[in-house]
Length: 362
Image 1 (cartoon, rainbow, N blue to C red):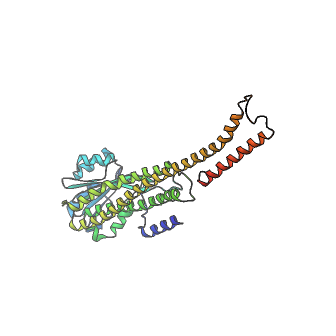
Image 2 (cartoon, helix red, strand yellow; image 1 turned 180 degrees about the vertical axis):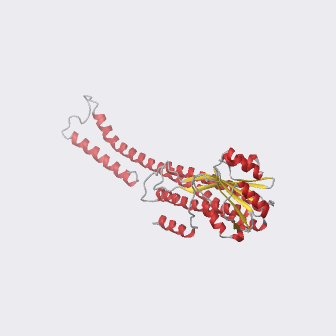
Image 3 (cartoon, helix red, strand yellow; image 1 turned 60 degrees about the vertical axis):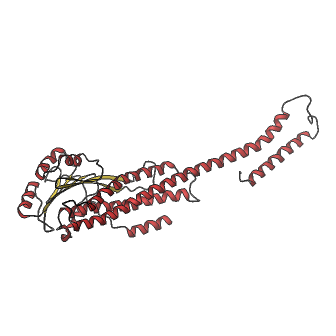
């Protein structure tokens, strides 16, 4: 009940999820070019065009071009590199992917690497459950162009582009407005995923600390959740410092008005990072508590075993003494010797059992 109420409250507070329209299909504009659009005064110009045509338009009439690519190869990127004067090191990073989130400046171009995340739904957390799926978005931002390179099967920029085109006043601020929208879109995903991960953390916490829960929750499930949380942390934490530098340093392409928007995104990113760190510390505590519970349970089992062994030791000792078969032993030939010995063993066992029950061993 508590878990369902928490989940409902978070669903009310979190932002609506955008529909992912991504697909691996290649565009007729090129083997890797998904779209190439020219914007002028914040308004999208009708029709897609090739990169060469887009450059001629913006150099002749102003505006900027926004080109989107999906998992390009080095050969597919060669012409675009020469056309926009991109740095070879940045191009190599964007092609091979698996980069650390960062913001770097190459002459008049900003190269931004963002880790995208998506929550993988699952019925129940297991030791092999995949919870967080990651991808990458690389963004080249110049005075009159934005080039986005996407890796992974999720985090399409299509819905975000449509939303941004509905705000021509913001889009009129230029390529840095597009970079802000992309970073804001990615950070929103971080917040959504952390909210979903909290449901898994709550489920594990309830299972470990619930009085009616299963004794000794599988530590492998907690460890798997920590590993998936680490994957999320690798996407979020490294971006905090580069985004701060983007706000604080006077990069030439960054307009002061856009800098305020980046500051707001930085606050959201810090919130997601703090949540992830809190989850990590909480899972450490849960794991330690689970291990302590297992240890306590083992101690209880050992006490019970020891108590029963002590009870059994009394009749074993007496019967062992009278089983030595010596000729001259007292009470061997008594008429009531056997029932007296049995009565003594039963009485001793009952007294020991009562003592252990009083002390909580049985």
